[in-house]
Length: 213
Image (cartoon, rainbow, N blue to C red; front, side, top):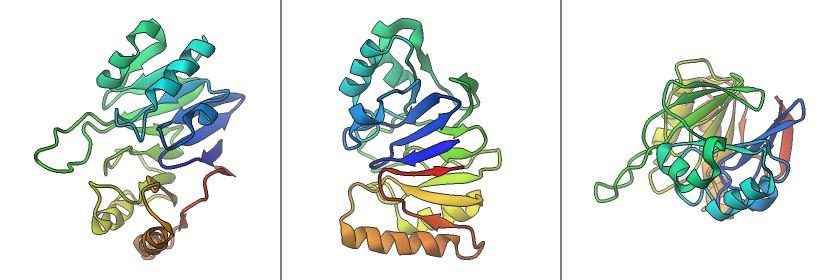
């Protein structure tokens, strides 16, 4: 599997000519991210994870493209019929030749006055887990964990505990677009601290970086 880290929480996964894009948000140059995509997975409805206009345009342009997400997101794209699929915790899906297991129910809390939204994380081919905006721990082992680095709902200590609880073979940062260079430096150091007891590789990749997993 070819893994490419894009801006913020957006990533591309490529295998055998198929391309799955996860969380193409408004900060992620979603039009570029979706170019050549076979399927789109969206963890939840917030705009930093879903550029609805770009996804809608991609669905119009490519009649083979499918979308997989929560009921709230799927409802926004009802016009595309059976190319749009709801995802729920416990689902085991075949998406463009990838095996996708769905974990999680709800977005991490921000404040009691902000209603929670549904959030589902995706474990793809048992290799990469994208939790969206949550600290969901999958029931299955995770080889590559994508770790949210900074958000209104995130405390650094919880991020550290999350990485250690999941115990992946490697970890890469996501959800980092709201940080300036100073913040990126601090949170990258804390990511390394989180991984230190186990010695697993943990890093923040520059957007556009690709790796074979």
